Image 1 (cartoon, helix red, strand yellow):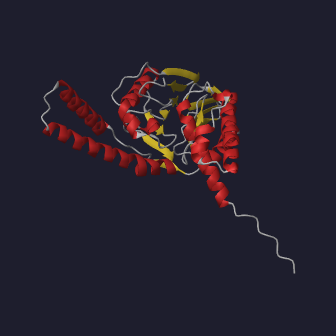
Image 2 (cartoon, rainbow, N blue to C red):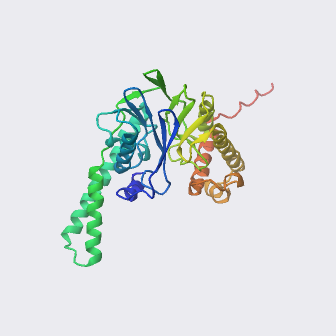
Image 3 (cartoon, rainbow, N blue to C red):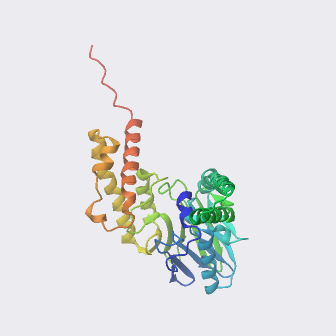
Length: 330
């Protein structure tokens, strides 16, 4: 994920993300898929403060979010909630100094154990390459351009601050202010093992993060795809009519149900290949996107979806002990 970030850092967004007011004091920031924000965010204006949900993919996108909030209210951002530990939801955290960073116990672990070491390795590599280029005393225009690009790359990395959640919880946390209640909930494994959602029961709104991709094939790099469906069922069990996804437009219950059907259909597509004894390569090479999902975004993720489902089904079948043989007759 960090490697992809490096392509986006320093690039302007294709167009400013759309700010949608979905209830009094509740806003969703829906991003363009080809900009530097990458993932949706949102914020809730309370009586004396603001709660932010996710901060986009880059420090610059986080600063744009902060500016958008200031255009709505001058109340301070008191809490920044990270739905999970992936970089497209956390790398704007540094735009909110002084705010309490909130997330699940697992999200904090993911940032510390995965994201932080990846950033440290990338920064060390960038420094090494920059020294090598500088020592070569580049003379041609192409060489000077390469050196300048490497300097920008290093400088961008050095500006980035990896900030894990400091306030963490295992199952849930409530924020109450001025008569409004915000519930932060861990519903189970899905996109990662640490996804949380923000539920506004009074407004019947959920910020779902990447537990819900709206009309888009999900990223399953760190997913538990066989558990994801049950977690989406728990999401649908919440008293809500409006669901803000991590990627895609603000959705309805029917949009969430469509995503739930996708997860079910993915298992139904891959299971016969596992039962037949097809190899992973055969399954990935022959299983195609069903027509019902052919217009969804992120079609490039589908082979990885098949691969992840195949691996989890194989692991599950290997973990199930064979039925005991009946005792021999005497």
